[in-house]
Length: 121
Image (tube, rainbow, N blue to C red; front, side):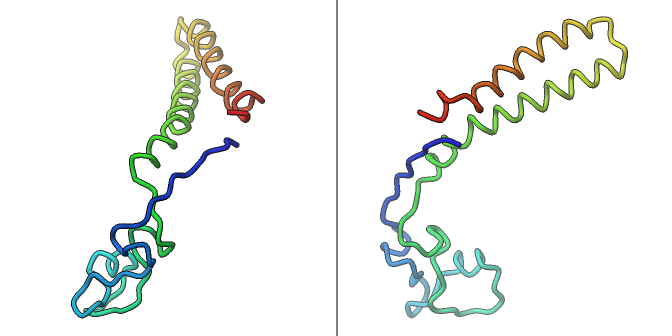
């Protein structure tokens, strides 16, 4: 939908190799063992749990910043639709105002995500 660039940096946990060797005797650390939900004490050669084994990681704040606009857009649309259905079910005297307000905002959010301009940026 969007042309999003990913800024990858060498993973500090595995030193850019992709295999965790931070445990005792260069075995995998407890965090990576827990990431893959393995039972036992020592495992060697597990993929890094931070970068997923590719040796490069994207900072968590960048991932959150890229996903927040879409998540907020979906939340706004669903909350407004819920408000319209709730006011209709309760036979609110303000249903026409709620419908006009919600319809405008839902149209704006959907128009942004499905317009050609949003795909170009």
